[in-house]
Image (cartoon, rainbow, N blue to C red):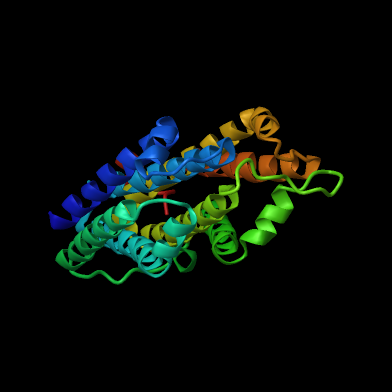
Length: 291
């Protein structure tokens, strides 16, 4: 019961801030007391979409078995520990560099701390289930590829942001894209890092979810459905990326177009192909072909 409450609290929190960052982006920025350019606004919207992903899976798990709720609470606690630790260690310097009052930092620390304690409590109340990894328990190959992508890009975003910026923000002639405001680089690097932490947290969440036994078949099915939708949304971003990057004077090289399309659409199609060949949870118990 407590684990369900903890997951619902995480879902509500990240739904609110995800929606705010996606659809009321400038209001969100002004709430933290900062003035930013359109390049940062685009990154905020991307970060908001990733926050909604967290909310989806927290909400999904809140109606599953106690073990599923528990391992989801554990994965959320790991992610929130990343957020809380970074806020405590680097938050003051970041807010000062971005010209923001520290009120927003204190709000972040308090809210992350409360959610972290709720998730730890939810994990404990579920019997402290020890998670297994899906990669060692016969998960679909598309989910293993999904985990690899989350880890690779997540770790690059956290520790090697410069590699990604050089790769995706260099024009065909070798010139670098220019930030629209003096503080743009500060905010974009920070959001790269935080989205990277979300990606690493997502990898743990997916592996914990698919590392469970047959009793969690329904949760696995719904998780794969949500992962497919994630990739569908990224594929949709590709449709408008040329116009968005043109407005921001960002590069849109042939390499960027094809690498994004192959990864986004390829993963969407692969996940959907796998999903439609899985028995619907209500039929899984009587489908002898379901593993």
